[in-house]
Image (cartoon, rainbow, N blue to C red; front, side, top):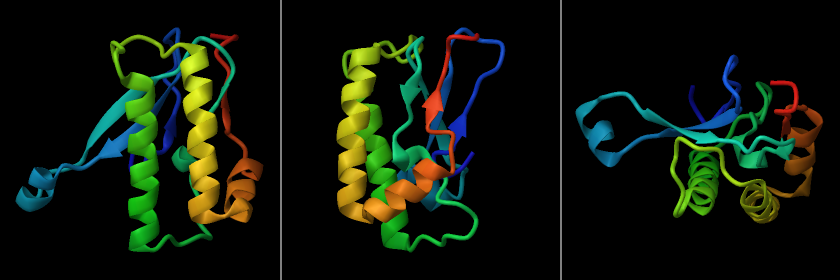
Length: 130
């Protein structure tokens, strides 16, 4: 997955989001980007807008892609500090980080861009049926 697309892991007790990460070293030697999986809490939680696809009709500039990547990294850092990455993030930590991340998204990309991503759907992971 590229650009931090949202992923559901079927057959597992938790859902997750996946953040594509590219190290400077992998860029220099031509190797592929790696992916970091963030295991969502076992609750219905909102996915930060930075992890949502802008849609096929939207072309992000290189600067916007970098800003989106930075927002994804900020969210990952916020929810995974002092956290075992294989375990679900506590819902309260996820929600706090998500709200702060979405506020930064709105500042960088504008409220309209946020609403467009929200209207495309897929902004929640609901683990209650897993």
